[in-house]
Image (cartoon, rainbow, N blue to C red):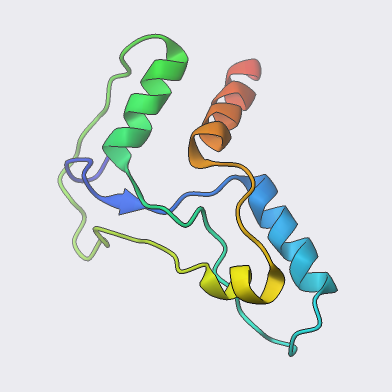
Length: 109
């Protein structure tokens, strides 16, 4: 992890992206319209690591490195246009998507 883990990102599960793309393809909106598709809630990298540790049933070792110059500390997508124009909201919450992703990787180890 570059930095101290307090930086935040707005994660989403792949099923949410697929659903949004299907809704956008079927919507009657002007061509070229752009939508932010994300979970709609920022999560710190430290929280992600804590959740992964809980899924693993043990404390995971995190390799903290110095922050990278120019790295964005906090990133949070505004999904309101997709909600308003496509009637889209993420159906898979952050914790469930992270758990599914963790299990997918675990099954392939």
